[in-house]
Length: 63
Image (cartoon, rainbow, N blue to C red; front, side, top):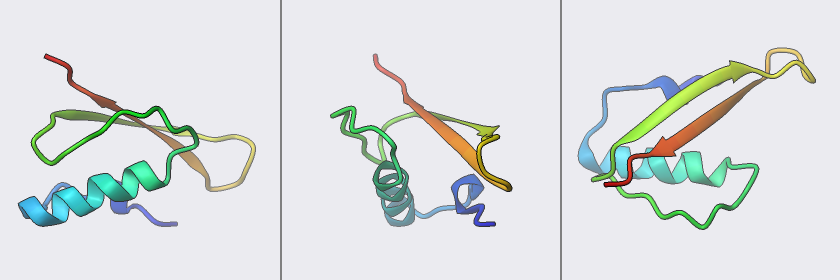
């Protein structure tokens, strides 16, 4: 199982790449843009339809 979404040790460039990866994995295109300057909240939950699967919910702080 791939747990790269829980990595917390990024350079600024690596973080931008990671955020793009998260967006590419999205089930829905919300049209929300995100950058490495944004504050995000990442939640993970189990996905019962498939074995060893999970859903990641990512929120962006709006000021």
